[in-house]
Length: 626
Image 1: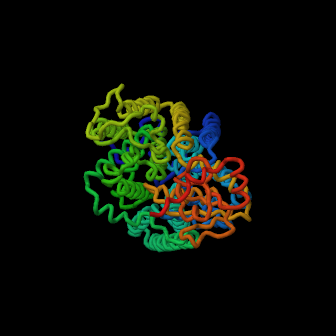
Image 2: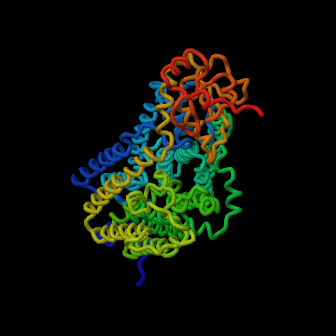
Image 3: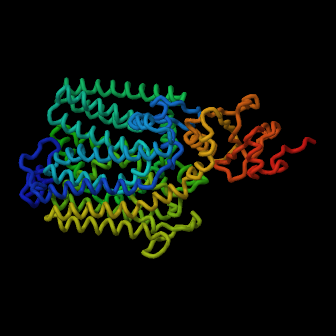
């Protein structure tokens, strides 16, 4: 006889009832008792300790746009004057609003940055609670659910973000809370719960513009739910539309007020999708699937199988619960991620060769947080062998495709930005250190340059098979997974620290800038734009200098008439003809982002000249006219 439908995702052990997305088990059989409570407390403390370890020693932003723009926006929201030196596409300011109060207590950019990282850790820890509440819907006791949520937040894919002051952790929090609100709504579809759901979606969008697609998925979900729950769903749909309009208007209004332009990120997405080829979509889909497999030790595949089976059950009953929303949100977020990177420029023609463009994970990671948690919950609760077989099979398929096909295309030696692909960082030491021709596809082995494509998936499969083999001892499995998450993040942290200390070009800016800031508010600093730097360095330099120089007054110099008599110090290019004609001398020292310190005639120039710190005049004199 065929297995009853209700047991397709049901446990074969523990004598438990079927995990349900809509009906909460009255007597959860996994996760109760003192050992689980101790493990829950320990897992939260471990998550805190790992996040603190990751951020420890970081005191300067590594990203001129994703970090500096939001830090400057926070500064302006807090009421501080900020020079008009912010470049880039702009961002919705949710994270800036959260960290704005920091600037009420300090005007030191390094101190403020460190404080914002600590705020991010708090956000990550807060995320454990709603994620655990989601997990309890799948048959785990609250203590076990906390362990699962802590494990997911300790994985490198989320813990490494503690090293950066970006929107990701706030996006993850609101994504998880929105999913929890969806489950509560499905359990009791009142107007109030629809309103809370819409509000949280609005906050999610206010945190990042790419989350617009999640609101679209929510709208479709509510529309199909209206078949059975007409008025609550239609009222909820109207609320989601209103939340979108308000969040979009507020995000753009703040961007206009603070940056003098609306948010433009994603405006070219439709054009990019229309110009892309399906082959690129498939290749990037393979690469990002490979990333998600590694980032979750393969557990995302089990979660995805469980989600699909539960959605199929909801479809057959024509009663679409919150798991349908989870699947819809996952699909649209994944599509946005694929559309962003399935581009010939990023994959093949860009002069900056990137590995992370092929296996990008940061966009999907927030919603994958929920899917991974569901996978772990199902494993601990107990699911049928067919579900586990499908989960293992998907990981094997991804590993085989990665090693057998992607290695022909992907530059494994390419650039790695830790914040973009944190989930594979436990294996970063396996990456090659020397490039080779992209026309040569090296077949991976256990010892050659492409070995990461073999060794990393093997590690994932061994972890997954061990967890399945021990699934009748859920406490051991849960504790082991937490330990593996800790080890993975500890192995990943040095790569992120290396990025901050060596590869992020902003670190050496402070020795140049600190003496200028110490001149005080009565000494305006001039800044010359348009030095003709390549590859976006000019815009990045403006962002960094604007952040580092604040709160000192900065006057931008575009035309010679912008040079004022009260300017003593000017940041300018290696040659500054307009300044040289006025007697400016260049201070000795290396440039940062093609920018040098120039000293105008006066007492400061005389003192520095006597100290021998100015370049000889003939080295900076303008060329003689013919």
